[in-house]
Image 1 (cartoon, protein in one colour):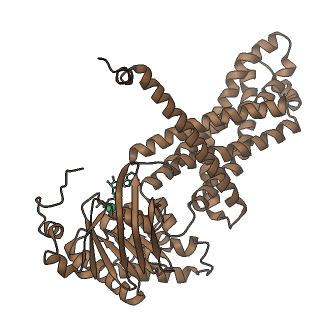
Image 2: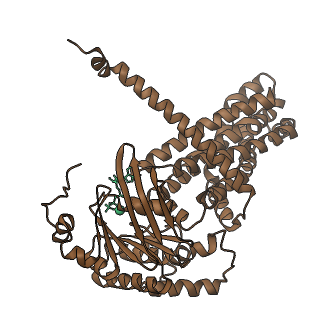
Image 3: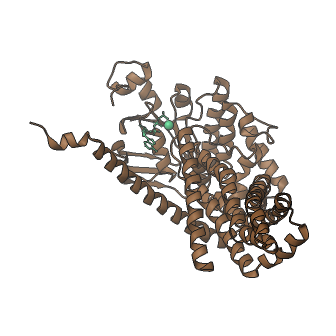
Length: 239
Length: 269
Ligand SMILES: Nc1ncnc2c1ncn2[C@@H]1O[C@H](COP(=O)(O)OP(=O)(O)OP(=O)(O)O)[C@@H](O)[C@H]1O
Ligand SMILES: [Mg+2]
């Protein structure tokens, strides 16, 4: 369960989030769409406590909050194995001591889930952007979180890897009953993973509804987004 | 009519006042950040488990990879002083004091301060740019989201390695400094090694050694802490990493000189 009420966030004097409210139920996936710079990453960062809001409240149900970063954010001094096992070995509140073989098993299982295996010894700089993205996905879900935030999980992936990740987002939701938010620009990701869609423009909610409603031209904003038109209520260059 | 206020805003004076004000603000912000981080790091040094494997790796980086540079800088400082002073002292009949004088200089001051400067330029800059890169590529955010404390994970091993290795660096570089002084005095003024080393013992005092071991621990802490802090607070992309690194190096240099002054006044006055 994620509850966001009247969220306001300003950077210096610029209002990035303007009175934003929404809810994500247990086991539900919300897709968040909007222009570049509309404040999508900022919402996710507030939910996982990396930024603090100027006003408004955020509630998440108990358990871990995981985040898949837009640009992967893998630890480049650690290899893939240590990246994925990071939370299990470094977190002070995880008291269980995992043996090397247990760790190996967990890591290779998570890697298999994202369609990679046998790359445990490689360093992030030796991987392609898409592979890095998938490794960061595996790293985020290693502690089986109850709230999962994906910042453009399929951006920069080929269609087949995208499908793999999308399927996995759905499977993970069904298995763990986690609440997830998927920030994405990709239509396939919206239609395949999301139960509902939220559209943000200039930090304000301009649409909320199901993917079908969005595709069937929910309102002027979604119409412009779906048809990728330059003409409509949203102006790219207007600041 | 001329609007005086508007006109003033276009003048160099106005510009300079604003520049000065922002510099002063910057200075106090940075000072605050460094103070907060030092408190947090000290708290974390005492509570919680320390990852010795990481500490050992950082010690290797801090103390071993830097040795060639620190040793040669302190050695050469000693050579410079010895060549200039030894011949003069020998001429004045002070050949029995050359070893003592150089030893005192190296142990009390030159060894630690020159090593400190070498460490800042080599290790400090690399610590700052490493942590800053982790900041701007969101790796530090990723650490926090995975519920690991970045202070504990990044600062503690680096700062601890500085505190452990700086005394060692000081001991080794002082030894090299004293040895280099003997060669230089011998070459420059024909002073015998015997005469040099006989007087070295008069230059070694337990009190000086204790004070300088303490200094080394404090300097190691300060350099690692300042450099990690500026890296940690870096903003923006590649440019931000550059700014953070420059600031870290400048602040470490100034902090070292100020600390050295404080130590000199409080222990040798
Ligand atoms: N740390 C920051 N300091 C100042 N401004 C920021 C900061 N982070 C984000 N912003 C500004 O906030 C706005 C929203 O940024 P955000 O990253 O949330 O956009 P986004 O919707 O995720 O865009 P994209 O689709 O390109 O990832 C942008 O205009 C950006 O310039
Ligand atoms: Mg974003």
